[in-house]
Every structure is written in structure tokens, then in C-alpha cells.
Length: 88
Image (cartoon, rainbow, N blue to C red; front, side):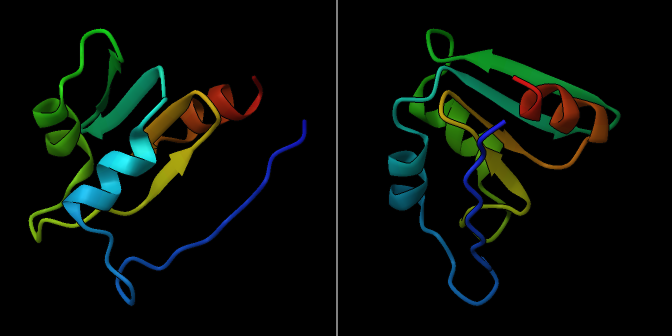
């Protein structure tokens, strides 16, 4: 497993709506921890409005935590899903 890790503290340096869309560009799978479940949306199903609802917090900036791989991005934390994504 060859994962590159980059940390960005969104509280100190918020990421805007425009920057969020740029970060998500090219991803094929989007995941969001919502309550007790994890919502999965493919790039074919997701429009910009859907992605912004999934990845922006109430302040209008990128929520935390967000974990990204080459082909996927996940908003929120769910241990089993993180494990699944990182084993790919």
C-alpha cells in the first residue's frame, strides 16, 4: 500500500466552495458519513450541488475530516469504511 498523506487544518485555513469542487474533480466515488450510515454516490450520479451538500459544512467551507484517494473522497469518519478504502 503506497498512500501519500497530506494534512490540511481547515479551521486555520478554510477551503472554499470553489476549492472543494477542484479537489473533488476527477474522483469516481464520493462517500459521506451521515448519522449511522455511509452514503455512496458515483461521479455519474453526482452533480455539483450534491457534492457541495456532501462535502461542505454549515460555514460553507470543506467539512472535516475528509479523506481522499486517487479515485474517491469521503466526508466524515467511519472506521470500517476507512479501512475498506485504504486497503484498495
